[in-house]
Image (cartoon, chains in turn cyan, red):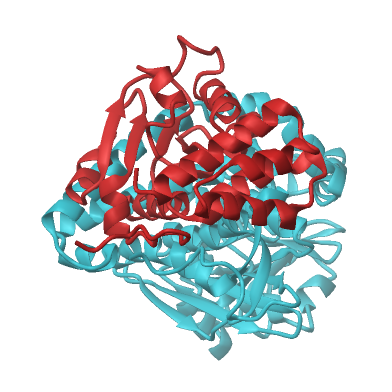
Length: 389
Length: 210
């Protein structure tokens, strides 16, 4: 049962963010959990300075700060300053607590929880990957019927901006010519590439059979693949003054469908771009490990609540806070990226550091360990990601 | 004047020479903005909005065809570009065709792309188009291209591939198809022999500078 409380609640040891206040970091790290041992229903405070209150035999409200509560300890002074969003007026506390005590099962019934768990298990199963899209294919195709028109329009944009750049500027390579082009011309060129990649993601959603189509498989350097996508996104990061930093390097090759695996890099970068605040920062990590490549993208993003950790990878599902930051969004990017990762016997993980906050956003890392191909060296493989020229 | 053509030796064609000699046609019901770039780079390129002259395509007049899948060839085939490509593969197997399209997602279209010598997405850069065209034209002006095309059409005939390749090369360099015809006649069906000899005759004409 989930209670629609404004403050965090604990039920039989399971902690849930409140609708207005997340679980504060000291409570997440707290080892003693004295709030869960409270015998009576009086308002009390913990060593960190937060207030808590027993609501019934199983339910405790905790992690909030009543503005005029006494005694006013030093710890209380600190949390009062640091967790301003967790402060509740004393005049409101009685009503709020009463509303929680009387709350119905507003979001999920026990059956719904069971159903949710079953869905998660199913979504993580292999049979799902075949069945789900097959069943929804017609609806998805209808929903994405605009894609074909957009592809046509985008090819006209792509070809015409190529003609303008090729005719106006001299140079031995397209990169050199782009370097001489006007800001507007460069923007059109990269916007067209950006749209192309966005539309390509839909390809694997409608036709997941492409993910491991043998004719598309090849050996290539994963870092090279990433660079291809990064070039497309770089312009947009710069536009929003988001600083990007690459840490580490990968020289290992992987064997797979480059366009499909590109969806993973594309999704990580897309999330970082979409949810970062202006002037924010994005860190990209690469590391060659024994039999795989570790790849991660970190940035400040909206809070992902504990009960959403799995759901953000579900099809057409988005985090509550993410929707507030970006109301528009289909919610299939991470689902598809996870589907592709699973088809390569790996899994995308998400971690959020609730103690590292900037502009109300939390340091969020999406990572994946991609199996490296054996028998290939960094000098082998194809030339898919060679420089233009 | 320097000559590329020496007897008993396959001539080496520099890319500029290939560009001058090669004829390209783009068949697309939409605009092809890259046409002007190809022309200014020295290529001989025609643009058709539809399959205007099928016999011209069948004759091998064009060294390279850039063929769209949708909106062309409806007068000749319900399968549009795909139908045209299947037909060309039967009547002139040495013809180079680059399939290009926007509609490359459904696997049902894959036969079209698999049948072609290369594929291009309409949204790719001009440099990608140019590279694909140059690669195919260089192949078209090499002896190995014709030898391998003959090998492909006779693959099902259980013929010794090494001996076949040698016989083809000898035939091209000596400007004589009689011995090759005899060699093929021992094991290969008469129609296929004719198709193979046709391919070798194109190579002979090319090496002789005709």
